[in-house]
Length: 434
Image 1 (tube, rainbow, N blue to C red):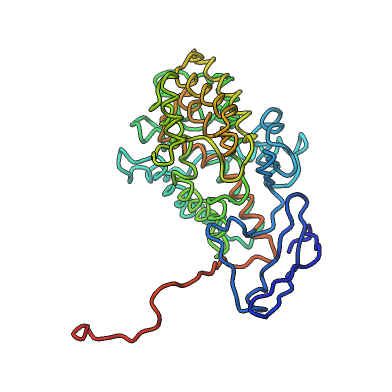
Image 2 (tube, rainbow, N blue to C red; image 1 turned 60 degrees about the vertical axis):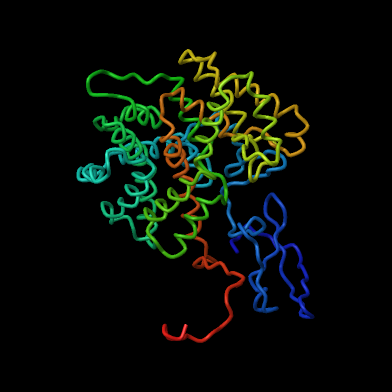
């Protein structure tokens, strides 16, 4: 265990007459944990925990979530404070280094990220290998994995400096790759980054500018984009983060590990949830049809489910959703869609979810995906780009988690166990005797 963990007694487990003494540890926040690392050695038994929902896979000092209370902290700072008062690159520094930067540290860090936004000149040819109608997430998985072929001078995970350079490169180049994935999918020329623009503005320009005319980034859009990045920066040991850690436990280079995380994020139960929520709002269409769909959602025999409500971890109002709701209104007002029927449907659904006993009893509160989909649509992004934006924002969280794992002296290659329920041992028979 790392130095922060604190022993807090032992737990006794008796299995078939054999007793195991298992240490109990207390973290800074959250419930105590029982260390079962020696369970097999003491009792010749393993635990079974499908989905690892009751298993702590690591010790971490990065993010804390209390789902019952609706709390999300990055290095101890509440997510709503960071979203309202900070900016994405400052949050990146915080996640990677453990503390907020001083003014000079933030300036140096921002300069370093800015200087790494360009891609290798030969990298643009890589995009031409994809079909013209390739999904942007398919491009992201391939392109990020290919970074190791272009930047092999930062793939030695045993060298702290190379790890630092790799981290800066991925955070800096992810918007450039994402912008190119978007441009390629719609058949427009690539737009290069501009050093005088901030992180979010640069990304918006690379997505929406065209060579034929000047492009001015609206401040409200840049700030909304920055908030979206902050709200998605890290979320503890979710599926994609655990994938990054598991891939990294084998010693794989950081570019390959992040590509693995992107592949996992692509799943509709993970990063694709905001797209599903938007599709649901479009299916409902108007406020007068809401009662019909709410009734269907309550009907156990009906396969329809309200997307954007409830969360695997949060059993209270998702703290990110509160910030996203405000941002959603600001964006819609800026683009003149403050009377957007989809927003009206969303607002009425939110009201029902917060007042209807069915939703309250089941703790089906609106989550961040409920608002982010309609916000991104209003900003001009096609639904195929929603998960790409999630991957861009989450890159820093993946890197921070990967870096923490590499520096953990207790780290071992991931190797979950199983309970085997297949055929017993049997002898092979030649094909003619079967």
